[in-house]
Length: 396
Image 1 (cartoon, rainbow, N blue to C red):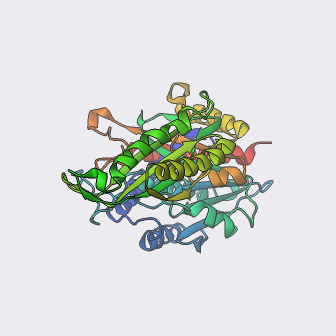
Image 2: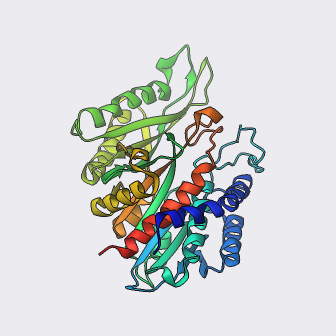
């Protein structure tokens, strides 16, 4: 009989190895679509563990299959492996050795946990009551992402996958805790790029030109009404601009101003409507003020919805594994995540793993240059993935 205590013990035995894997990946980060050395390292770990796998799936993606017995259901466990274009500012001895690139979103921890879970399940041998696929995907951080490419390459077939489990570190949750949310969990993502064309000149004589800075400023404010005046107030959505660049000076009005922002929502119908309204409002408002708008909408990931029945089963398994007090319900969030493609294709559950440790100063958010995670979380994450997978293989 496979008990939670047995999985706990197996995870504990592999903890040092998981930390070593995570630190190697952290020292050697690679950006989305560039993860060739990361994939080679992960492939080597799988080969050493005797786990059959295929490389080059959907780019640099890897899929491994651990064959079991019994009714031969197939559960997939998914992790990502790409890093971000951020200069690391922490002083840990395993900090990034690549200038301007770091694992600021915990994908190194995701990959280490998944590999360790795979080793735990591989070690069960003929006791494993079905098949487990390990999906290690590239390019989660940049659309169109690696998930859709791996699905197009058949990662959910041969054998056909019945359900998919994913896990993401959460620095807002204390280490030792895990979080779940049934139904809608994360928002869709569409990025907005607008160039406002005007006619520059001396700042003391704005009447002799068309000021794209003034137009862009008006546009940013006006576009907020796309959300505040057109969407259902109880349906979350947000439009934020994080970049504006005119490249003028205090006394020079530039010819153009560039804007970049992001639109997030849960509702796919409102998503399409809002994108059309953003484009129309930008074009017409800029034209009415004497300028010309060049607009590009970069379609991103769909909203992520967890299968309620699967998520409830996973939550109950988590209670068995870490205790009721350490399992929390997560609020919905307008983060984006290309695990959504797996959730659209198969019943799926995307959960969070607590990695915060205030006593050790591990409190920085993801995408921060000081981001880190409590590596004690790796043993919890690996064991929990294995335990949930076993539960799915055994479920009716």
